[in-house]
Length: 393
Image (cartoon, rainbow, N blue to C red):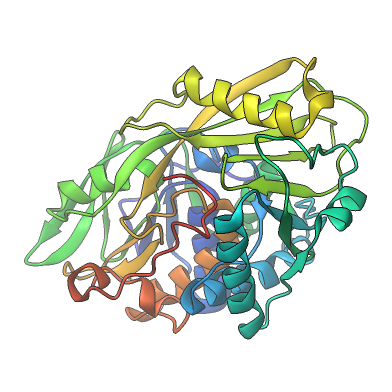
């Protein structure tokens, strides 16, 4: 599907991280900015990190203007991505529900919904009766988590995570991008305040522009260049059930109990859990998180009670203090970071890659990602999306 070249001695741009964001960045650098000599370096295989370890939900109903602009830019790219890549990423706009279980949920969700509407997003409030029509299997009257309403974004949905990586990889390869797998970046070499290249398990590779898109390991790589990033890395867990016939044709999220569910094309229920309560670089996580999630899922959907879990996994998410990402250059010339996505990375894949490629090519941020610079942790202009991220960070 793509070449496996030996690394060259030098490149115009090196992207560290062969997930959706990294491959997408290389694709847009080649397609929109005319770069010809690009390498994507991945320590494992393409998509072996968070790209292959998420629950594939796509939406843009975030609270703050800056977030809404970024995520909706991505959603618009999602809508034409299969055609542009000439590869079916299986993007399904089946809609996303965010449930309200108490008065606080109602007020928070309606506040966010109104902010969404002011930003031109397709977000609306629906009552319990309409929820029952959309998801007949849901127990809306249960005593522990009564369903009082929900926000609904019809343009939201899911996509095939592997296909996104493969599509970007194939089109990048066709434009001459070197995709180098099984090559671990050990450190970033700098000289006189500028990047000089990367030390890898296959030798030193020179470059004057380096983009780090390594999810949970970004802070480790940044430290080798003397850059301290405000990130915490934790396992975020998910699981799938045994396959069954279609029973749910939308995505349902519950922030209060952090349990969200959709159904894959193979019939598996894709269930998202929360982050573990401690920093870790394991790709499993603790079973107590899974137990709490399943307990909530079974109360909301009693018919799932006798189903079997097919498999469980964790992805290493990097979380900023304000639950918003960093898409920014830094004090070292030629060094750029795309990180801190927490649990929202997959939905942002094409939009993040598009603006990060612009930032690297022009050494200045795109207007969409200007607010997501490292400077905000000095100025205090944070973008607090802890609520809209729908995850108990």
